[in-house]
Length: 413
Image (cartoon, rainbow, N blue to C red; front, side):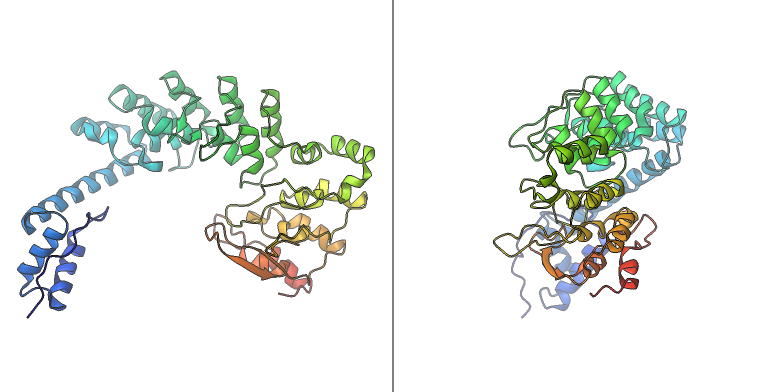
């Protein structure tokens, strides 16, 4: 006899659809869990907390209709079709709170981000944001989500101006754990950062217990982004009086691109060339967990793609094959080239080439942290093997040239 005992109840999937539910009922009947398709559908309805299949079907159809409307609204926003947006949101004011945009904060967040099309906010896009605010959208949705997303890119400053004019808080914490001032620090956007600071954002925003507990200065140093704009961001924060929990003057000079100050420190203390910094708890990328803990200044230059710093340090006697400290689990021991060869968009390639020309050991094999999304992963590999694990694909999906360069240079894998 088929088993028609009640199944354990569960919530509907976030994007439930009738086809999937019908397939579930068919599978239940085929497995002998129900005498008929109707009986299986009844069991599926009860499984998801509905009294009958028709009631479940009506509920899912209404959800699908809402999803279609949200998709249509997104299309209208992406097309900068202001009149269509007005018509849709006037017809259904609930659309002001639709789960759309980053963190599903709402349509205003998606409008403010100017991601599709990727461009500075046009007069039409700004008018769209203003109309939304005037007609029911919350400028503070998600913890000032619209301002947070706008602040990620400097070209969106006109949108930032509009949002703040309408009450957005430059000192808000998005989702309760991400101060708005951290947004341009994450993406290394000095113009947006300076705008926030000039409009009252507090850079000394450190707070224990928060997901991101550091000040803006410590956060910008630790961001996964790599860019020549890092120095400008650090300078703006220092000028604004931002402090750091880290005491690392030479490293800070290097990150700022101040080779003059770094040279002065090396003149005063030549032994610093060989010093290993045990408290550098940053340096991971968006893909790779390896940090700079226990490394030298040359490792730092390699991690941040600073060729000028690498040249200065090698001229002063830095060892291109200096190994980082190894922890109690046997993890570490990498040389600077491991850092340079695993950067996005060929950012580290000039330093890779420089290190190879200056005798970098390409045969060294060591145990290092793996992918950022796999916290328990560790790998044993050479610089070439590590580069192939983190190929640094660009926005077009093209692999970086670091691995082919190392291979052509005779590197072992």
